[in-house]
Length: 241
Length: 178
Ligand code: SF4
Ligand code: SF4
Image 1: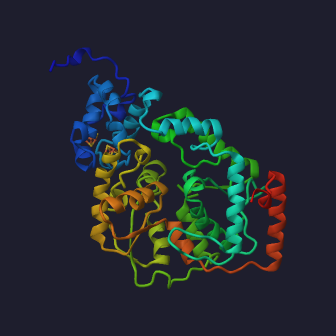
Image 2: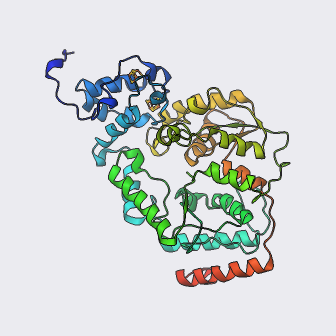
Image 3: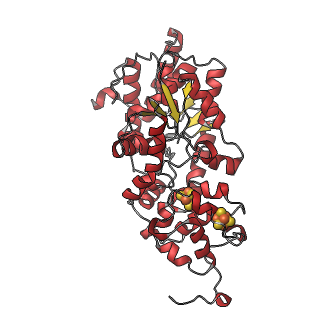
């Protein structure tokens, strides 16, 4: 291994602010509390060192920033207040978009284009909500765990309801695979006689831009959620993720 | 608004009433999702740990904590996008920390307030590590205990009118597509 000449180290592409890495005094607290210390030979302390010593590309190219779950334990305990999560997330940002592992970036692109990560068309979505509403009203719901529920007379799922008090985002896995799970909230709203609604468009609540380090996508997704709330005049956004 | 605050408000103000016999005699442990608690505290100064326990206790008062929990709690292993990532074995290895914690509590139920954590625990870790407990969302617990009081005829009528207006606007005809 060649020795690094620290007098000639280029400006780090990764350690953008002093509190992201410079202030670290290498105590190792972060690494001792991290559940993925040692995976592929990395740990959070090493990630900080890499960012400072001009080795950031090795980190960016490694799987490790994606195996870390950005859980924040390291940062919570760091005596120097190093912004480890921002640093690791930015290592993800520096990955070329077509090399983002798995489906995450595809989901982000799909969400920007069609309003949800799985590309569920609006007509299917609206029909599903209406159909489930009918089942719930009639008490003919079948659940995976075999629970039985009574009829809920008068229930329906309001979509873009003007003047609703609460607007609720939806996790696209539910309409796709576990639609009955949406009824947990529906039953609570029914009992509470809440004035609530879901958005007609751009209802996705799972913002993968957060995970892929894609700030522009994340901003756009948040803007849409707020726009939906403004449109119907809802004071509260419920984001049950 | 956080799900904990909303549920707490509904219960506290009596807007929903809970049937406390549903989980009588059962014990529950709580998984603290990083985003709801630690990261919420680090970003916004509020960790909601007490609200989460208060709401859970309204449904199932016997709570057995994992060690560590709360602000020092361990991630379920699927956070930060890992649930959707191709590094499956790494996600499961990470989750073993959580699975061991859960099993050590010896409870009947697990409360996992977040979608992602619930999926990791219920759909993956339960099978990989033979976790005997069943996993619930916190709103699932509340929903299962809520006492259903049917609306009055008037309320039902008003709701049907609103519904019909909405379906007309959105061009929904349930009979047609059957
Ligand atoms: S805990 Fe903080 S100061 Fe200690 S090594 Fe980690 S980043 Fe550096
Ligand atoms: S955020 Fe990542 S590096 Fe920090 S403790 Fe969690 S898994 Fe480890």
